[in-house]
Image 1 (cartoon, helix red, strand yellow):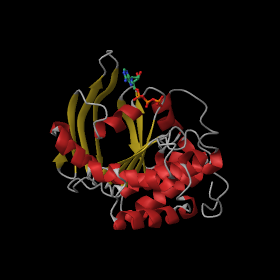
Image 2 (spheres, helix red, strand yellow):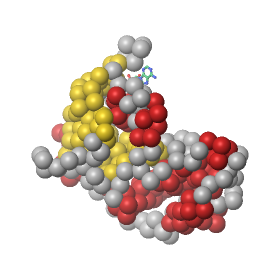
Image 3 (cartoon, helix red, strand yellow):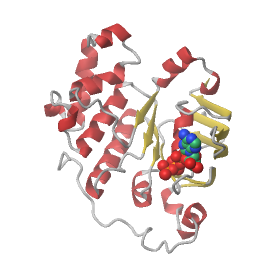
Length: 272
Ligand SMILES: Nc1ncnc2c1ncn2[C@@H]1O[C@H](COP(=O)(O)OP(=O)(O)OP(=O)(O)O)[C@@H](O)[C@H]1O
């Protein structure tokens, strides 16, 4: 990013110490320009989830600042934070769908930050929200599942619903926490491809916490490596070589990990 470009997200000097004494993040600074899809990698316990959750204050930072589109999130009151969170769509590993509700109801719950509580309670969503939900479900190949209960879906389908629900918020930034952790390799690639395509289509930035280095390399334009709560790598996917991987994960034989992926799959071909 050019020095003078205004970032969408500007994290400066972020430190998080949990009440248990665990120091999860130390002085992390990171700027994400609009529309950039960034992968966050690092060993277990490096602080990836903590960093993502400090951005929308699901976890309260101990010190440092998080600024989204010019607004300092770290000092917002509860009400103001609730409004600011509309601009950040969160996608979780475990889908976090309400099992007994339909796909459509789960998707529309993405509008809860906009629709009043009682209107939501009585499921009175504006017509344009319902239309947008159908459009997005169609985009991810799930329009025919709108009336199915969430507990009838496969893992890949659930993650697609989670993605659509996050998009219903009309966010500027997606915070994605291990989106493929419970999925098979083929479905994982389809989900990553879908997230990246949707970000491109909608000019969305994303921070994707992902364990799979090959997937990160294939789909993200920028890779940030965390180790023990500090950023130790920040560069393009092509610069993630054995030395960089060693700095993130420690000594290991990386020759198999950094092989190029051989096959291209067509995400449109199957709805997982
Ligand atoms: N709620 C919590 N209370 C206390 N310590 C925590 C809490 N959550 C995380 N930690 C600690 O903070 C550090 C970073 O954890 P975090 O979950 O952010 O790492 P991670 O890189 O996302 O790991 P993983 O890849 O295994 O999910 C770890 O030492 C962890 O034990």
